[in-house]
Length: 81
Image 1: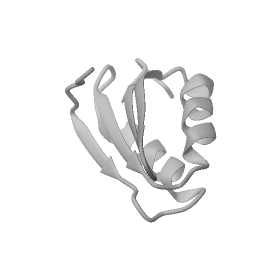
Image 2: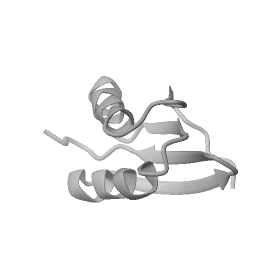
Image 3: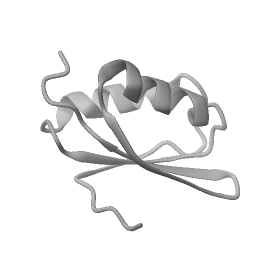
Image 4: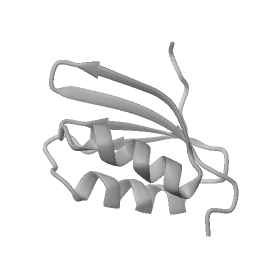
């Protein structure tokens, strides 16, 4: 599945908690319903990003893994304040 996205967030080389903190900031900078593509190399994102989405009501559209890289497509919730 090839998702289109509105914002790219490259967190390669960063470790917990930085990828999720950066995702949290990115969510605030986009419109409700926008899709953020996150590229990560920290294995903890496999646990942290789905929990982040579930907790804040964002939709995790797709997760793929290629070697040591994870790619997430997240559609932002409406009014997550």
